[in-house]
Amino acid sequence: MNSFLDRFFHYSAQRSTFRTELIGGLSSFAAMAYIICIQPALFSGQMTGVPTGMPFGALLTTTCIASAIGSILMGVLANYPIGLAPGMGANFFVLFSVMTACATVTGGKMGDPVVWQTAMGVVLISGVIFLLTSFTKLRKMMLNSLSPSLKFAIVTGIGLLIAMLGLKNGGIIAVENGQWTLKCSVTSPQTLIFFFGLIVITTLHHFKVKGGILIGILTSALLAFLCGKITLPGIVGLPENPMPVLLKTDVAMVFRHLLELLPLIFICFFMDMFDTMGTTIGVATAGNLLNKNGEIERIERVFAADATATVAGALCGQSTVTSYLESAAGVEAGGRSGLVAVIIGICFLLAMFFAPVITAIAGYAPVTSSALLSVGVMMMGSISEIRWDDYTEGVPAFLIFTGIPFSGSIIGGISLGIILYPFLKICCGKIRELNWFSYLAAAFLILYLFLLNRA
Image 1 (cartoon, one colour):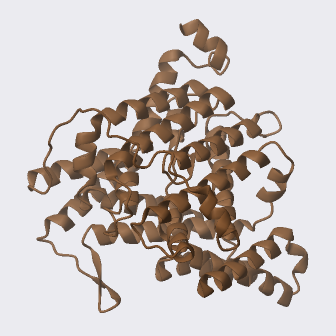
Image 2 (cartoon, rainbow, N blue to C red):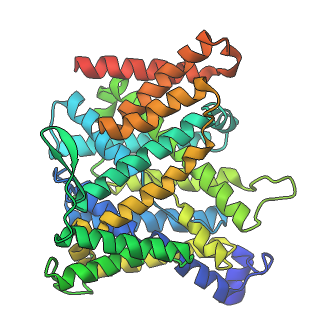
Image 3 (cartoon, one colour):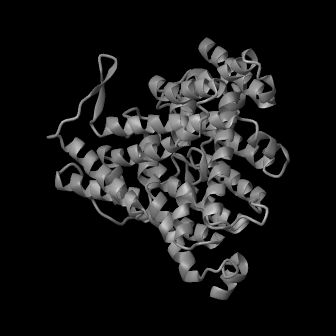
């Protein structure tokens, strides 16, 4: 068995062993397993208090299925040690922007099946476009088309929005009289659980302990249990029925409102493509997997696996399934081949059988609040990459990463910066720094805002 796996994944050629690959897979899974708690709570509406009509149990099962499909595809097709799951940031974009837009254009409201089913149609089409471009030269052109400053601004803006939700769920801030205000109380179990989890996660990150976020969630859950805030009906059980969200994607409704939803399709597409490229570069560099020219080999297979996972995820009722930078934990543990990704996928499948304890943990929002803040902090690291010395880059970037959390709209914040970007470049005599996508993106977003406001 070992020799067969080595012939398929070639991990011996990468100076690795089956045991090392196994440890690498378990390490990466531990680092990214927090999504099993966060994704169902977010998409069901438990985390935000606004029901979407998607059952938590079904989402838990399909989160594991979609993550397993994506991870195993990455291992088998591309032979890279990268795990996949519904992406943090992309999931917030789909919930707050795509579903909101789908509610507007369809005349429905949050909780109506037509809203989330249409949103899944948007995600599916974006995945198909990603798949079609994976083997073409258009992929490279698109990767180089968006200003790096704007890419980093989108990441940091979404990170701020995620962090704000963590602070809200942790009882640290609240909205009163239409304004955010400090609500922290040292006697509140909600606040104590938040800070306890944050201290645990930060300490573990400092000492580079793998799976710090997951451990933080579990220790917060233990404190919540001791405070009587959650109860455990059991630990192991059969997976929840996925059928309420499985294969419910409504592509036909997307095509009925294609003009209004097209910008959202392309934003989902670009977010997935940039995220995959950034993660692959990071993991490949950490594991010395680049070739002699510093290039990523089989990059078209990496993109194809990621795109196929997004399509499969949409059919499972999930937001964009993408590569996880947390996969670097497995590389740091010595994992070098696609066997790591396959092991991650198997772990996700096994996680379905722990639905009772995951449901209990995710059902009390403060338990995952510190994890959300920690994810926000990690995403904020990109802010240093923005070209602040160039106002034609810094001002649009600032509008994006402040506009997203302050307006509570990811698409709104993105629109502010991307629409302004070409106008600033033209006015400042830097028209040569613009490319075809700068104009196309601005035109799409202007059309989107115009049509959406008319709907």
